[in-house]
Amino acid sequence: MTHQTQTNSFDTLMELLAEQGFDGMAQAITLLLNEAMKLERAEALGAALYQRTEHRRGYANGYKPKTLRTRVGEITVDVPQTRGLDFYPSTLERGERSERALKLAVAEMYVQGVSTRKVAAITEELCGFEVSSTQVSRAAQLLDEELQQWRNRPLGEIPYLILDARYEKIRHGGSVVDCAVLLAIGINPDGKRSILGLSVSLSEAEVHWREFLTSLTQRGLHGVTLITSDDHAGLKAARKTVLPGVPWQRCQFHLQQNALHYVPKLAMRKQVAADIKSIFDAPDRHEAKRLLGQTVAKYQTSAPKLATWLEENIPEGLTVFEFPAPHRRRLRTTNLLERVNKELKRRTRVATLFPNDDSLLRLVSAVLIEISEDWETAKVYLNTQTD
Image (tube, rainbow, N blue to C red; front, side):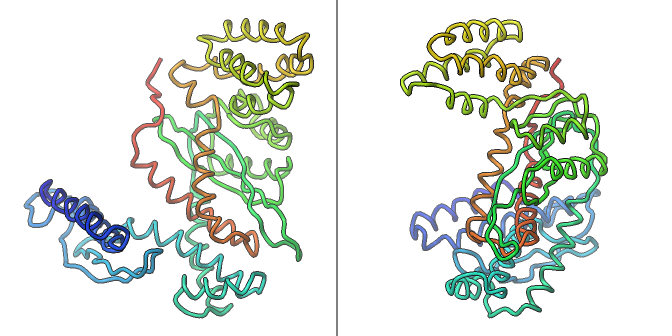
């Protein structure tokens, strides 16, 4: 596709939204999907439409209409076909996967009768028809096979490992409970981000974290030089067992949040936060330790409990100083995972309550695959060539 064609498509999209506002959103999405799929086909074939090249891997073979049910209504897109090459647009696959998982989560709630009457209407709106337990089971099995293959894929060398957990509500044993979703993100030797895996457990107890970390090593995870996470007792014990000797960086953001619990007066909080930030922003470990000692002495009289806490806990956030300076800002917090958690929350809040842990695992897996696939084509997250 030529640059002029892309420009014309963009202009058409802007005209639609300018003239019709949100009423033109369905048309805009249709246009975007169609253009994205054409570009993807051209890349897969190694040639644009009517282009002559010796590197061509197949031929364009027209289009086939496909109707999609989206949150802006039904849209019909033109799916590009090929001859001589097996091709299906990932543009559709990614969206369909998480949409299927969401539909199944809501449908399971309806079938199992654990939700309100409103779910029946939502189910019919999402799926387009009344669902039976047999239909839900069959659809879940097909999607689970695809998601399980991704969760069990081989791993490799991952110098930097970031761990965190979030909670969702599920039905368990007749009650509504908080269920932990354990997450692992890695930065590979090329500086690219990757979602390594996830586990759904009833808590963050040591046994669950240990099983999760063990599963990562069994899939080939190796070469870890730093682990960044929050200070959770279960996780701390598990990483010492499964990945002994690997340096640990306690999330500086969470450290700052934790410190505020020991500040005796509200008026002191701003200054305490500034003092801790100056420690973390120090040019090297030696200066950071000097500033820490100075800060501990400063609050020894006015806030003795804070001073003691700072002296015992802040050093756990200084491990990152042993790594290249350009890497530190990326490695000193779990903010990368926090952004992933925000996207998960945006997608899971539609279901609100999951009927079981399998349903939760299914939707989270589908969303994480989308994020991980986007990262594969994104720019390098961390310049690992830095000395």
